[in-house]
Length: 398
Image 1 (spheres, rainbow, N blue to C red):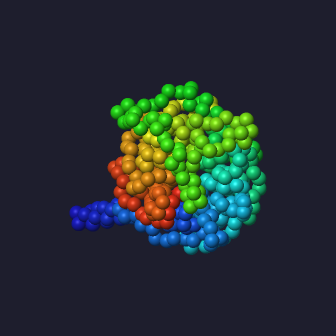
Image 2: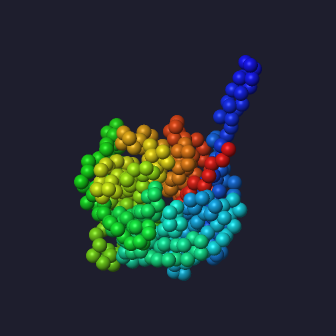
Image 3: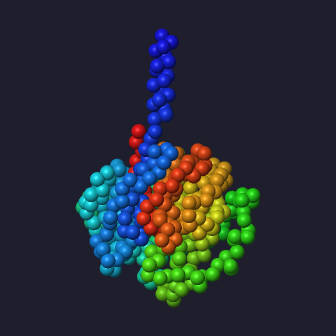
């Protein structure tokens, strides 16, 4: 009897120690590639590079990427076109191209509603006039664009509520948060984020504040190089050169929102203020800001753990990743990334690991840093093509 119990315990222990493999897709904007990265709990590695694009002589810039709700397909926005960008559909695993459709100017981040089955992709309009742009709505079964919904200037961070009924995006230059009814395909509400930020006090951890790094007057915009080879590097954008006269009376946002992430179980969304070094928590019932989190420089992308306990924020300018406890409102870790220009965040479905894409500069390779959300440590790094950008979690398997 004792031997039987011992064997049973040994089997259970072995099963619990069995490694799980995690898979993420990540874009390399300056290589026109998408990489499949595998992480086995200890080691991260790029196991496949998938060439994308149709113009071999030029960089088309794969930017946004998402995996469908059932995990059967992944979708990619190629930002540069003639003059419009395109959305591409691929089969996961085989990575076979299934179809494509033309969208708007510089299509960026996207997500699919599990309720409507439609994909919502923001048209960032990076190289166009500072006028309101749109959210493209696509039937992914037929790869047909059904509508373009007008929002604000430079929309980004396309994400859906947990129930799939509401779509959220932000407009970087006009500083607005938009809520779209996923069924009616109309803007239901919008919020001025510059004004909202002033209505709520910050959740401040004074022990981590480095005031010496908060003097924006010391930034030398003259050194930002917008050469053709670097045109896809958002970190080098010189906003001072944008012609505000073309903004049609819109204000020039100081908050500069770049991302929005809905909470997985509460009526809350979290917005990254890239220009003001903060994240705002917005109550979608009252449509008001409820908390403000002071971050390091350049918060860019946000993802929340599926269990709703943690928020992970990429600090693009600071080349760091912040991990926040949403219950206490405290930043529990601020981790240096493997190199400069931190970009996207994707969290595993079991809330265990955060996968962070890091662009690098010049000829630096792109990277994906894997952060253990239990130990709050950087575990390993995978290397891929230049300028790692959009990132999407695919699956975890035993």
